[in-house]
Amino acid sequence: MQFGLALFEYLVAGLCGALWLIPIGNEWGLKIIIDAVTKASGIGDLNVFIFIPIFYVLGIYIDRSASFINKCLNKFVFKKEDSSEASYLRTVRILHSSERLGLAMEYYVSRERIGRCTSLNLFIGAITLAFYNHWYGMALCVAIFIFSLLITKNLKSLSDDFKNESLKIITDYQYRQN
Image 1 (cartoon, rainbow, N blue to C red):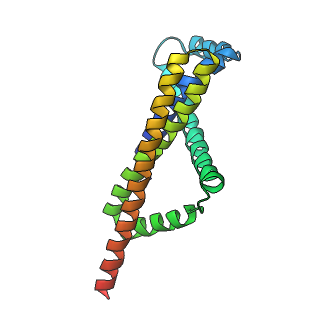
Image 2 (tube, rainbow, N blue to C red):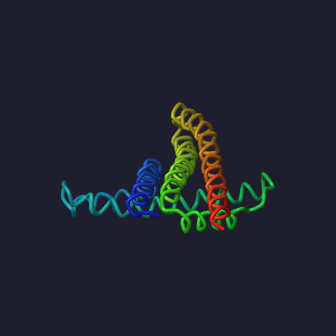
Image 3 (cartoon, rainbow, N blue to C red):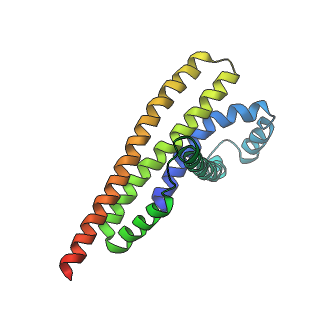
């Protein structure tokens, strides 16, 4: 994966995660830490250098959590086999065979990852708003969460279809070469 793309994906996930994490942090006394960091760095550009790595790491945690939750739901609720090993093998084969197909595949996988993280952030955001008795905000988050689940499922299908079709093209090309 290209570093710039990964940085963008994880920053988006981390910034969205901060929308529900900051109110929780304020409730649990982390406001003191946030205020101390802000005062220590002054009001200016240094905040960017402090908070971007935090959002990046938060984005990584959110992505891995969303991926883990998806695997558990597929295994225990939907009774689907874990196809992650097959997916990794398809990915490796595509990346090894064609740089252009690899770049296109990263685009599909990137959209899927952002969708997966957004769904998890919306779900946790709805729970956070429910704890603060913001029922209209919670209802909006739940509605968008349900919509985002449908979109994420569609993005996953597009990504899988792209990988499968790419492998067909690669196999056909290799067959014609022999």
